[in-house]
Length: 61
Image 1 (cartoon, rainbow, N blue to C red):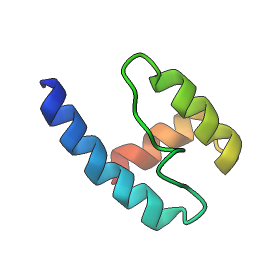
Image 2: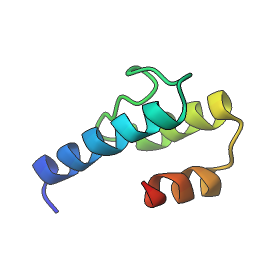
Image 3: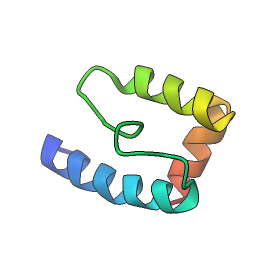
Image 4: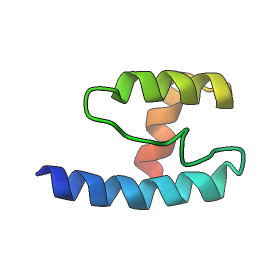
């Protein structure tokens, strides 16, 4: 999967996450190269979910 495909898929998933969790903002879901773990850490704190729970939620979208 190339970067363009990843970005496109993330944009779709980001929209679905924002629908599911209204508390999330664009800044919370900003995907930056090399900052994926930081983003997941922020989501864990904001949503009170474990890393595994977040991955399951994203995989189910």
